[in-house]
Length: 150
Image (cartoon, rainbow, N blue to C red; front, side, top):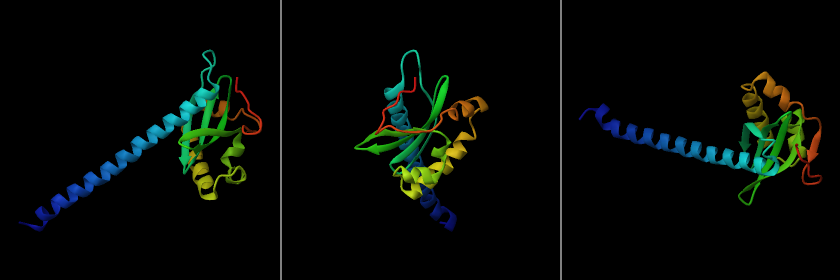
């Protein structure tokens, strides 16, 4: 048996293991994104005012989601607690700056990862979507002052 034939089963096993891990993470990511979108929609969506969530980025137990509820839009900072996603605040472009996330309680490493991922994800949005998301002005702490988007 040649050396190549001896390593083939090992390489196939490693490839299969790698694909399994990749697919498992992808499935978990999809489920997590669906839970975040569902949480946002449950909180603010109305039949006459649907909510569109074009971007969701996650790091650790924190996430930022861009939302559009015409004619408005903005960003939401969420935290996973007890298996559920809770919206902590809605905000403007300040949610793209790590120092504002850290001030809201996000660990600095997660804040850095979130802002980098958010900047990259938002680059793929249309100009209209970016403009609408950037139309939100200020920061609203939803734990202190509940707010409705409509």
